[in-house]
Amino acid sequence: EADIYQTPRYLVIGTGKKITLECSQTMGHDKMYWYQQDPGMELHLIHYSYGVNSTEKGDLSSESTVSRIRTEHFPLTLESARPSHTSQYLCASGYRGLGEKLFFGSGTQLSVL
Amino acid sequence: GESVGLHLPTLSVQEGDNSIINCAYSNSASDYFIWYKQESGKGPQFIIDIRSNMDKRQGQRVTVLLNKTVKHLSLQIAATQPGDSAVYFCAEKNSGAGSYQLTFGKGTKLSVIP
Image (cartoon, rainbow over all chains, first blue to last red; front, side, top):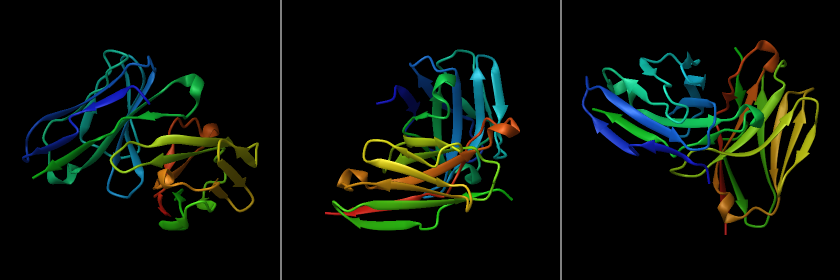
């Protein structure tokens, strides 16, 4: 069982709201990722970080931002949510010595009305 | 463009039988492949990986086969159990391009019939 936690599990909000999705891991992993996944579809990388104060954008164009002030914490923020942001957001962490073996959280299912 | 995809979106298997999940990739430069299992309501879970210098790798009840000639990857699950019911994703990476990102395929849903 991986020690990576995402909150909230479900979130329903109105258009234009600012939201932050939380992700924390207690494994001391240096690498952390945010993926977006629509039902039954592949995962798309939206942000990643290889350590404190290091963040990069992934392949999927995103209007979200991330921060990595502490090793264990990697929050994702949407300044102004839109219905097109409705999706599942998965956080993952990994360690350089483990290659691409990532540990995923259970996800946040976001619905923007 | 480059893509990683699966031949079959759904697969139904009788409990106790072997399962084979296929994956095709188009980037011949990909040198690392990995399989994840995603159960309903959960995040993906690592199953097994393989580097391009190998053509077969075995784990506990799972075997991954890599055919670079036809750019095909498969996951074999022996003696499939109800707990194996999930969506299975393959992913690839081209380490030589300096990429640190995995490209995921669309997934195959495996249903195990008791």
